[in-house]
Image (cartoon, rainbow, N blue to C red; front, side, top):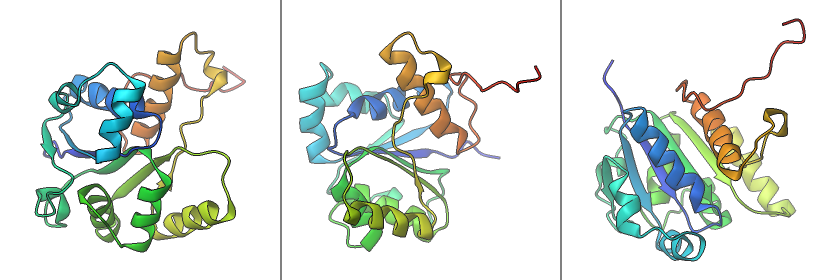
Length: 190
């Protein structure tokens, strides 16, 4: 089997560290990451990290401009493992759910859904109103996996970095990618 790329979308929601760290992990695992960032993600990156957009793009095997609606990842004939949107804003989530996409990030996610590939949305918002919940339900019914970045305290993380890695390790589990970053729950008998 060829080493198919995993598409990584980074939206403007708080939590861009999830997307940037996911790119690092994929690079370390020699899994090609194809990246698309929204314009809002670039703004959030500047607010939440000291990273430059060029540094984030350098972590990916391939990058696409948000406005490039003719990009490879906008077509179902381009084979991928699927897509993770990390983090996923409520706006991006709503666009994906309706199929009314405004840029490459949500178009690529729409393509993943229509091709019945794995789509994981790390939605980042709280509290949630009924409209958010209904949209998540609709996406789940379409085959998307809603995976909010919720820390697993049973792993007893000693740092924020460990919490982030564990969460991303669990996301990669959804693609059957062993990252070595998940502290697994042990059977009580072991």
